Amino acid sequence: MSKISFKAGNMLYPLPAVLVSVADKSGNANIITVAWAGTVCTNPPMVSISVRPTRYSHHMLMETGEFVINLTTKKLAYATDFCGVKSGRDIDKWKELGLTKAAAQKVSVPCIAESPVNIECRVERVESLGSHDMFIAAVEAVRVDDTYMDERGGFHLEQAEPIVYSHGDYFSLGDRLGKFGYSVQKGLDGKQKNSYHK
Ligand SMILES: Cc1cc2nc3c(=O)[nH]c(=O)nc-3n(C[C@H](O)[C@H](O)[C@H](O)COP(=O)(O)O)c2cc1C
Image 1 (cartoon, rainbow, N blue to C red):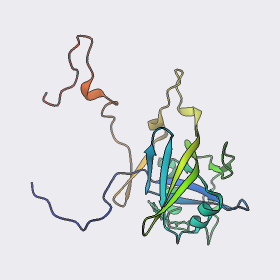
Image 2 (cartoon, helix red, strand yellow; image 1 turned 90 degrees about the vertical axis):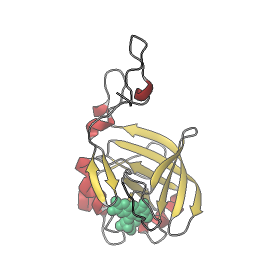
Image 3 (tube, helix red, strand yellow; image 1 turned 90 degrees about the horizontal axis):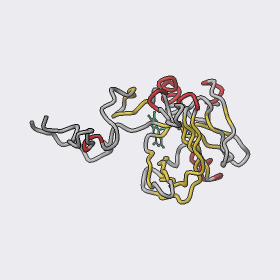
Image 4 (cartoon, rainbow, N blue to C red; image 1 turned 45 degrees about the horizontal axis):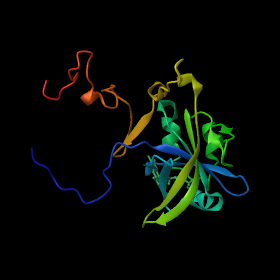
């Protein structure tokens, strides 16, 4: 196997592409698609989104210091792309896509009702990194669609058909390969169940 060198750049894929809802101080709300998003701390729960200052949404983030990350699904794939190529400067993306604003619990910015998971965030600091400003935020509340809950309180996000973004394309998820820790899981006989060498 040989490899070729790419120009140093962004190649950390696949990623979630999320619909981030934002609003200005007067309550005018917008949606921006963001792929440069991530979990940055478990405890306290914190996330980041990186947004170019030229985006219409940027001034809203600066004004309220609040946003909601709405996870995306197969059904929301079209909206995910649309909100990433059209600006709230020119159109009302909620109206255009028939998306529903739902009140958030802890922030003033609305959630997208059609999304199965809404993560309400409050900005703690903004780092200007170059092309993008990184908004590092505390997670204030998480709400999930109860359709995907089982009777034991388990949440099955895969049933909502989440999508990923990989090097310019959107994909749905493939086969389930195992659960956290499966590589070292032992069977009833005490022997390791799975082995790389099998
Ligand atoms: C899949 C995808 C991912 C994107 N990720 C980001 C991102 O992480 N940060 C960003 O500033 N813009 C990103 N964009 C571009 C913005 O979503 C796009 O410029 C959008 O029209 C801005 O909306 P606004 O002007 O209403 O704020 C992405 C676009 C797409 C399609």
